[in-house]
Image (tube, rainbow, N blue to C red):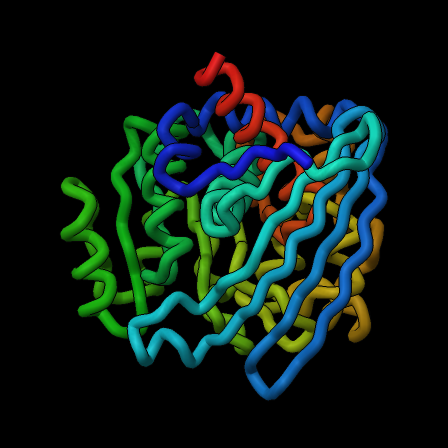
Length: 306
């Protein structure tokens, strides 16, 4: 059996953030993906397996292990494997580096949401968190909003300073509330279970873009933020009933399902930026996005090789 193995550095070389955001948008013009997720837990550790099938694109299985304690040992908190299968005959098409797919899927997902909802004239992007995802967000949002200044906030300021030092021009923010109030785009990538973003800090015209919460007990924004904002997400299937960001306020009656106005399968319902409105986007991920990402990486790899 012949298949392609795509390692991280070689697979990333031909990629471009804006082109990739366009590929994600185009992927949602195909038939809606069938997706299935399984979650297993041991304390704070998670084993997540996601599968997707998009008619016309193929199938993918991605398994991720999420061990938050690894950060204390300076080891990656997320590991795993990605397998891509042919839509024609189900044969193995590619083994694509897990971290490459995860990096581009996660940051590209949020970038697409921001490109559709945030002001194209945004001048300040605040990234909340200073882990691996934050690094990819610096790259993605610098490409998507080249005139914007990037600031980092993290509970441990030294980690934000270390990350900022690796990306010249990036600055740190010592205090969260004034940083949120000043930003045009706020992107959250934390491991918190308690909201760190308060709706009282938000102002009309801002775009809040949330990544971190992925478990039923995790939230990054409080109820007031949800009540004040126009809410969007990448996928109803992977966010509404699985992630605490929506699952908890839905169960408590803070919001209704109809308050989440559209997902990426209805990109035409993502409105142009309105300076009078606050927009909120939840990046919940999903294997269909991994499939679109891996497919794009394979296509770029093949075009470069050919």
